[in-house]
Figure 1: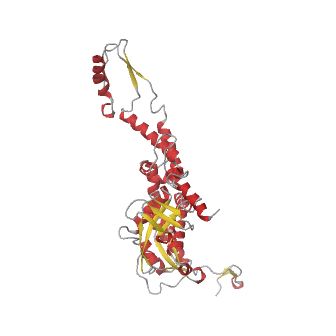
Figure 2: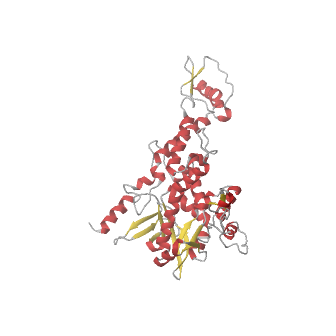
Length: 406
């Protein structure tokens, strides 16, 4: 089979009308239409997406020089340090840009930015419309092309002109969308919220019927609706006193919200959404009664950084190296997000850690001062170590015991 035919098949599968195109949107089994905006209308989904985006966007991005012996030093003069660490384009600072990137990766599965160059130097990354307004296709020779269907950059763009970050998935041209993968989970939650909203609109009262032994005339039926039904419908009219006469009786015909266990169902839906995003429920304020805030919080937060955030940063850094750096640059420089900035604790804990590093000779005093934005001290670039601990020796002149060695 020719290469073009292979990639043509892939293109057909993931096109908007293709067999797998529906995986990125569609209707859930609960009958709810699943879209980007509707997913974010769920409190748990919004909180998870915001937590991911804001956590990564707050990490410092820096280029480092690669020196012999594995030593890395910041390279603030590298063009990508300014571009990706400060301002990727004229409209966005770095934090806002990375928030958008992570939000698109988390929900849509892909990110696309148009690369602007001047004299061969990358000057800006202009965000393109997200998937599926922008999709990756293969031309007859098998090379990637990016098709933008809306906006001022609509048209086809060559692979070299687009910074493309595919998310998690087994297709090299298109990451999986959480919106599609979790549409049944999101659909259940949307359906549940709709039911709860309707219940609240009725004043949190079950549906009821009014019975009478006789048959009402059209005039009496209209008067009954106006005087006995309409004044007591809606949360604003809940709790009123109804006066029944003429043999009318009121009988409930449905279960209450407690009987239907709506609260329990909603509570169970939050961990399901958190599992899709890889965010611990406690991090978005959900607790089952056993609070995790007082025990092992640092370890749990580090686990969140290692298991959830690091794959995002590694994916981005890998694409920066592959697409935005030359082969020679990869040997001399490395891009990185500083995940350690995420684990900064309280002031006392941070100072104790710095003190331990200084005493062990891991950091110099001036390196610690630089972390705190303070000017260096004379002689502060010398690594020091503790001198109190000395070898144990036997001193026969003192009749036994230990004595320090000269």
